[in-house]
Image (cartoon, rainbow, N blue to C red; front, side, top):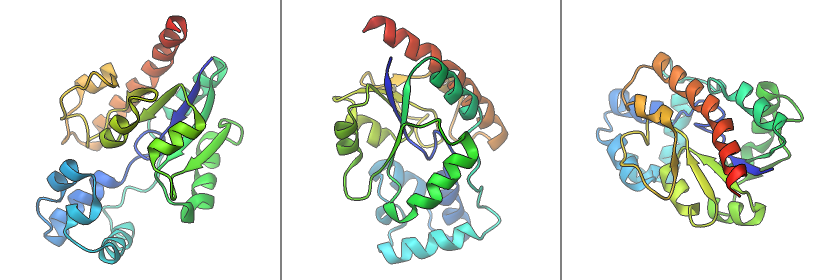
Length: 214
């Protein structure tokens, strides 16, 4: 069976990045933030602000009505259970900082149960590439296309559909889920729920194919 590394934000729990960018444009007048983030994958460049101001902006966003919270991605709970029942070993590989490790572990336990993951790996100082290297995962499920391409030469990467990647051309270095064909960046939130549900239903079959091909 396979060892599967899974990103957290945008794959297991709803990613707040797109909501933050849209809020910053609409409420703070930081026009062009979405496009700059898509080009650079850099928050300071996206907002054209220093890191201290980016942190302040995020904290303001967290208490605003626009903040979507940290809900599990539709289909993720059932999808993880299916992967576990198929004998795969699951671990999280996240760019979240170590400073919110305990809060994140509590979120994952409350959302998915205590024994679903073999281990958790936070980016902290290492890059996502270094995390993939040290964990030697066979497959990594990732929604950030920059991160996905950074590890695609080391492991098989499944690009999970999200509003910050579905508009991009398909890249042969990654596996693109069929669910992404039915998505576009500006879809309302309730339609994204269906896309994510379909994606998580698709993933176990895809991994079964990878096992057969090994």
